[in-house]
Image 1 (cartoon, rainbow, N blue to C red):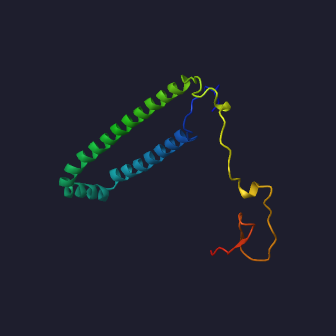
Image 2: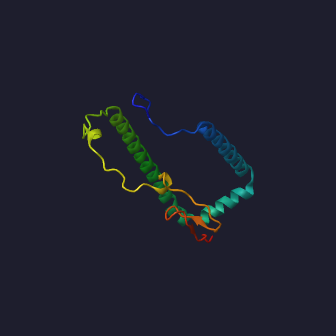
Image 3: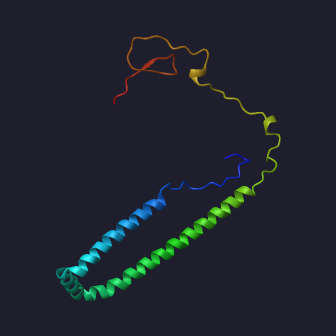
Length: 153
């Protein structure tokens, strides 16, 4: 990001998120409506549902409140996490926009002499010459380009 740029950094968003959500809502509504319509007009399904609920009543009395509490708790925790992340993103943006760079720690660092490399890599050494050979194998970068044994796969 440039120093002069003021555009905030954000996550890339999905292009068709709302359209996809709307399409899913329509499909779920149609399927749920058709099942409910079938329930209202079919005596066999009504008796099946009634028997299933009566048979599993003790389980449903426990599982239904626990499931509702779990869903509510997860929604609460997810919203809390999202709000914390959005606050952190806003704080990061404020810190980045208010950031100012002061004087460098070593104002004359370019005048300090640096130790030169003692050993230069053979490939950049002008005196290093690859010698031709008929032996198979890899070429060594040291010891006058001697051939090394072949690598096994």
